[in-house]
Image (cartoon, rainbow, N blue to C red; front, side, top):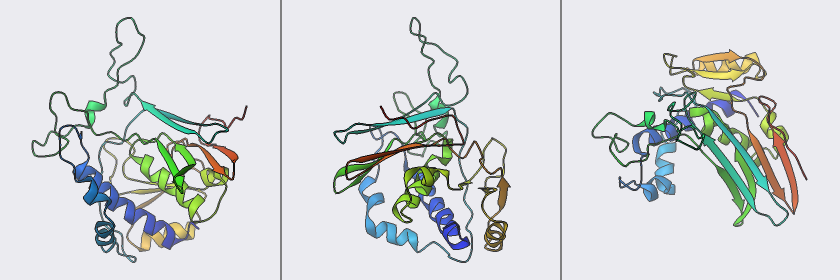
Length: 254
């Protein structure tokens, strides 16, 4: 857990997943997306062959900024609801729908200006966005609901919490509290090819990742921009909630 090998592997497979995202994700109502091909096990196996266990690979990332919140609700019948919403940049578009008090989002900023890209700007299209409402299942039944803010880091934070639960057997609060990393820029103009690790990751691990070619930046022990996750797990009818100490959420039973 949080060894050089563990974090290097997560960083490298995340780069490949985000490369596919940046290449393909667009409004499915307008673009023929190769969803089955991207989810194919053989394709995943070919992508895994690109991972070098000894050396970091470069990757360019998109605009990371955002303004997001999420929550998860579960009931005694086994229903799980994961919700995430965002107006994107601060104050969204700056436009309030008349008579509603609702501020309109400006996720259109994620459109591509490349006329050949699937996510190209065009009338009537929904833009690519980073929002992920997650429910993981076991044998077809909800086992975990998870939601977090975090801009481009959301999928990274989901992956880290899920591997903490599934691969390391942690209860959900511990899984959320464990140190996290984020790869890519936090603000426009940042260096893109940077891995930020919370300060609780030992210095020798950071040094080991540097030797593998990662540009590593240590941040605070509980870095607020590593996501503010909320989650619920269901195991044999028992509900366990977890809330992120990096933010001001709470796990509440009633």
